[in-house]
Structure formats: structure tokens, C-alpha cells
Length: 247
Image (cartoon, rainbow, N blue to C red; front, side, top):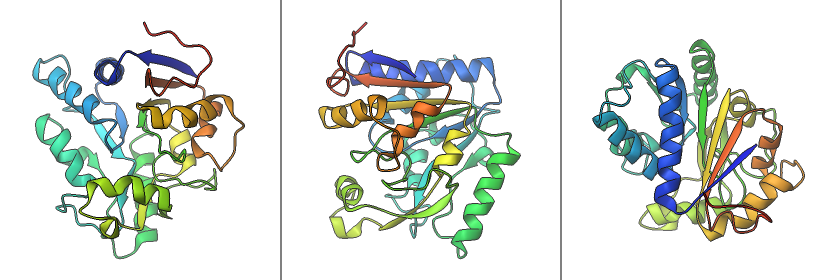
């Protein structure tokens, strides 16, 4: 596991975007796993800038998003489908048919999970997976006590996650209680993983993820077992680590 500490959020976003851009340049038809939430917004902004500068092209890139709220339509402004369009897809030359996001309105949710998993396999697997980390240590929407062998599945969100995500809604009661998420097994099958974290509220969780025991109670701890993980932190998120150096 490689740990990179950036001076601030802007530098974190640039470093993450540069890593993703390198993947795209080296393999123009890469399969990218994408995350949502506040943390990757800066990274997507930087990727859009690199695209507009003609440094990278998304014309042959395939994407799979980590998760989607269960019950939200794609046009709902709180859906992750809408989020991805606003922050990335509407600003780059990616083909619509190459974008994959779980269908939160699927009538048969279990069939949808199987379909999504099969689509990842058919695409050849994920080359680089972008992750954030929740305040309770979740990755994707894999909450504490998740089974590590789980693949794409329907999850019930923890109260901590609902509370954290309520800032994006008018009130807490509007936050969906369930979501479709790639499972831990799906994430761990990615060839490379890039995890981003910023803010002092993530510091203790980052320390435990890197130095603690591997346990389903802290889902992100399983990343210790992956052969190619890069963690990019700002100084606040890295503050609980014993030794770090800001470049």
C-alpha cells in the first residue's frame, strides 16, 4: 500500500487525476471504477481540465460506478447518475453506451445486481478503481460487518452513513435507506485501487485502515490484502499516522 500525502485538497485532486490520466494514456480503453461523494469532485474537475487541454481522451474508456441509491430515478438530482453527469460525463467525450451505473429503479433488484456484475466481467474487469472512505470505514456502500465475499448487492445503510449523506438532501428523512453497491469481492478484483481521503474527521479511520487488523467491522481494512493500492491523503486525513512527509 502506497501512501501519498498532499498539502491540501487541491493538490490531492491533482495527484489523483494525474494517476487516472496516466492509466488512460497507457491504456486508452481502460475500464475505470468511479466513486461519488464530496471527495472525488475535485478529481473529476481536474480530469475535465486535462480532457479540455487534449491531454487525455475518454472516447474508448468504459466506466462502472460503485453504487447508486435504491429507489431514485436517474433524473433525480440526488442520484449518483445525475452526480456523474454534472461533474464528469457531460464535460468529456465518453460514449453513453460505455457508462455503467446500477439501476436504482430496477423492478428485480437481485437480477440487476447479477446483471451489473456480469457487465463488469464482460468488460474484462476493472483496471483502476477510485474509492473514498466513509466515516465508519465503508468503501462503496459496504457498511461495517459486510461479508468480504459479497459481490454487487443491495445494502441497508447505517445511520452514520445516512447522517453523513443528509447534507446533500433537504432533510435526513429524504435520504434513501438502501443502495446498490459493488461488493468487497468486486472491488478487490480491480487491478489497481486509488483511495482518496481528506479532512480531520477521516484521520482515525485512515490510521485503522492502514495499521489496524483486517476486519469486516472496518470494511476498508481489507485493502491491506490488495497488491496495488495507492492512498492519497491531505495533511488532515494523514494526521493520525505516526510518520508522514508532505512533498
